[in-house]
Length: 116
Length: 113
Image 1: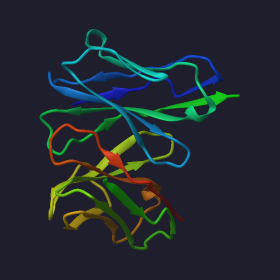
Image 2 (image 1 turned 60 degrees about the vertical axis):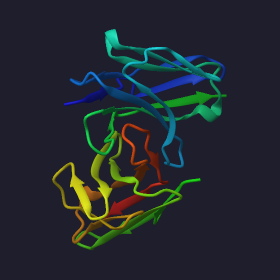
Image 3 (image 1 turned 180 degrees about the horizontal axis):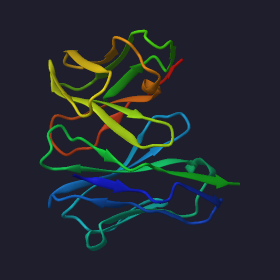
């Protein structure tokens, strides 16, 4: 069965610091998809990125970047020059291609607090 | 554009009372629909998903049930709530094509007292 581990329960940084959120996954499938979601205090999950298992290119979107390494089964998320608005719980998730209905397996989340 | 509506936002219910949470999606057809639960300090757990009207799959045994009476309506129910049913419930949808991201509603915070 698939599993997603986010070992960092809480992280606290000062504004403008860089911060990396770790995500390690387990799956027996060769085709799978990885996701990051942000949950601000309002509770709604906001989709950030989807990456398929065949694309190991790192991706950058503004201050956000993602490092996908199949060799270590990791999909880490870095926020550069963090801002107070980045404070939220961040979830990493996995779905397997063979599963019907795009079921997501989530990690337990990392709570990021950015202090001014 | 597609939107997802979930209500109510908060709910306090006594043990043994029934539950009905509703979720509707607009701007898309034949979506995959999901109910997730987030317990305090834990990740999200998939409870039910549906790939079509009347088609419900349950992921974990529990006190809850789900129904999809219309293409874009998904309902989470219980006949008698337990204290352990407390949590944050999120409805989500994804396009009918496989392996795409899911989009979430704003959630319902349920407290069973």
